[in-house]
Amino acid sequence: MDGKAFRADFPIFEIEKSMYLDNAATSQKPKCVLEAEYGFYEKMNANPLRGFYPLSVEATKAYEDAREKVRGFINAASVKEIIFTRNTTESINLIAYSYGLNNLCRNDEIVVSITEHHSNLLPWRMVADRTGAKIKYLYPNKEGEFDPAAIDEAITERTKIAAMGQVSNVLGSLNPIDHLIKRVHEVGGVAVIDAAQSAPHMAIDVKKMNPDFLAFSGHKMFGPMGIGVLYGRKELLEAMPPFMEGGEMVDIVRFDYTKYSELPHKFEAGTVNAGGAVGLSAAIDYINKVGFDTMNEIEESLTKRAFEAMKNIPHLHILGGDSAEKHHGIISFTLDDVHPHDVSAILEADGIDVRAGHHCAGPLLEFLGVNSATRLSLMFYNTEEEIDAFTKSVASIRERMGFND
Image 1 (cartoon, rainbow, N blue to C red):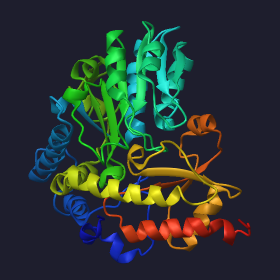
Image 2 (cartoon, helix red, strand yellow):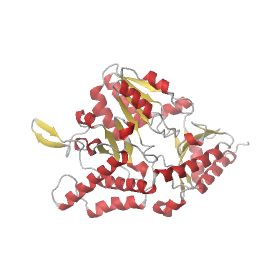
Image 3 (tube, rainbow, N blue to C red):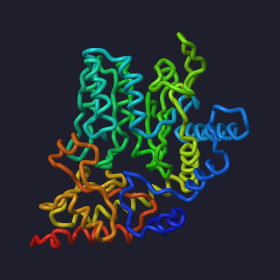
């Protein structure tokens, strides 16, 4: 089973003929999303929240309707818990600056998985540097799996924050966030979940999951670039100071007095990305229309097809889990004697788009003993023919580089 039936929804596939297999970096956009964002600027281009004339009122309604759409998508209790940002990176930085710097002290501990994207690692290093708190790393096994007992041991009475991605952007592994959340709550800390790689592929219910903060990006889930989401528990957000100061996030400003807006607006300074929010709303509608069950069935089938072929290619080493089921549409690998950038360049010459490098996960690659890797990442609109072309090209690389196997 593959995504042929859905490719007509994505205009780029009528124009760009290369095989796009870099979906963990950003997804392609269906026509409905492009039309929604264009429609906002075409029909209601005015600053939301700032005018009482009809155009601004309409823009405000579209923006706040998008917030409600996101609330429903993750089953949050209130739209006041939904903050629009630029992306996952900004969302986590908002938590770090507004919560971390104001709630951590010397010798407090921040527990972070080494599988994290730099966006969910570097902000916590900054907090540790400025407050005197200490970073404690959670280490998986070589397949990227975390031992719940190790999580229990790492999180102590000193732990104030525990941060983990739901799905690794390098290994594709599904992390035990439920256990981490439960454990950090037992000691009175907060859990920060990076859902950038999971939100496009699986249902998220924050009432059941119970994170304190959760972040994801629109551009990875068929939405526009430049729009992201931060979910935060209302009582935490209300106690946090604004991340940025300026227009729109205030109700009253005097020479010696400032009254900030209520949630969620106190965290959305300046002119907001209303067109992006409308596009994200359309992306959620598209996801709901296709359905995660259909998406997962296709992606699991394609992942298995790729994994089974790749494990039989001589000199190729897959990072992480030993079965396709553990990779959730992401397979990173190395090829003996060939730099990942060369692998990527040869694939590009064959019309295949993949990512090569450290994937913004330097500590993880260091732990795995590699400097960089090539990554295949799938979406439900990919096809079996693309997988076969990819594996055929990879299998030929060493010979084309002059190695005699």
